[in-house]
Length: 136
Image (tube, rainbow, N blue to C red):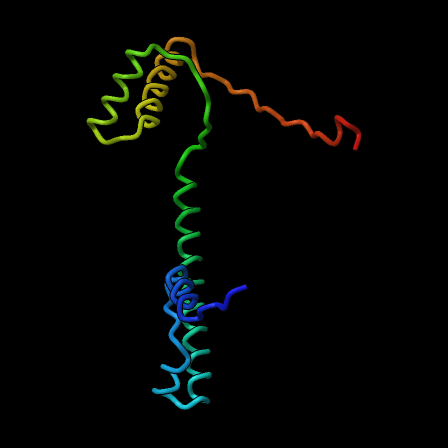
């Protein structure tokens, strides 16, 4: 097995983690060895704390954003090719996702149906438990 080039490995990990890892000899030129260890640990702790704070803030924002959005699913359907191509053209021209156009179309159809026939009640589907089915 070949010898590992530490400079290249440090550059790789520094690029991946966005924290450049400098050679120990550069640090030793600027600080004595005892200060180097302490300041390096403090900087690492501060960077770690900042990253944790940013991650928590991002997670909170994401949860708040999700609360306002409806649930989505992926499903397959069959549609007239000309209508699908027109929807794609509208989405491309207006710079909006196809799913948003389809959701508006669903809202329109549901609203018209409910105006004519009354509110639609959705069944609550309960998922089965595989361990009970197979008596595991």
